[in-house]
Length: 220
Image 1 (tube, rainbow, N blue to C red):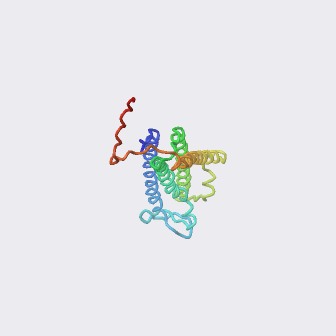
Image 2 (cartoon, rainbow, N blue to C red; image 1 turned 90 degrees about the vertical axis):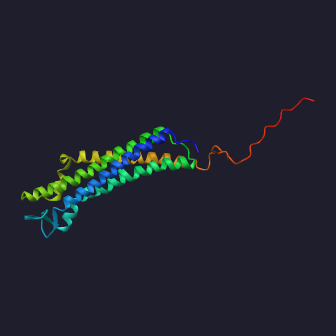
Image 3 (spheres, rainbow, N blue to C red; image 1 turned 90 degrees about the horizontal axis):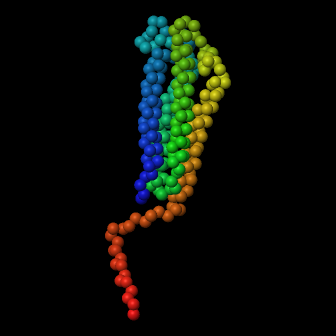
């Protein structure tokens, strides 16, 4: 088997290091949400718990309690999936294709497609964290201040209240992530098409007898 191409090795190193960071961020988000959620409890109305019962400071109906931290919660899972597991899958594709004898994917695709994907992925997860954190903390602060604000009002105030900014950010990040992943997968598809098709260099068998060179022909 030929040696792993240098651009494959560099891409695998980047992907695995970034995946490790993404998984750690996802785990931290899960711990953070658990701590946030401990300050609430289910109840019939939206109200401040006074005096606080341990860590519990506010009471929320079931639907409001679930919706208030929805984007923060899915940010935890999406960070592990988008920033962690999928980059590990990309790295595994490169290694498996090389070992199986697939065609070599170009250095441009191997380098730029994951970068484009990761920029979009980081942006998408950051938007989830921003929206979930801002809505939940805004709701909790308004309740503790004695002026509860509904979730619709809080969400309308995100991104400076601009729907254009919101659409631009969501559209840019998700498009970058999708284009990067699609570009990389096209390279994987083309590379896999060469498995078992293109001849590979035969590996000599050390146990095979070595043929003796034939003696030179002599003139009559």
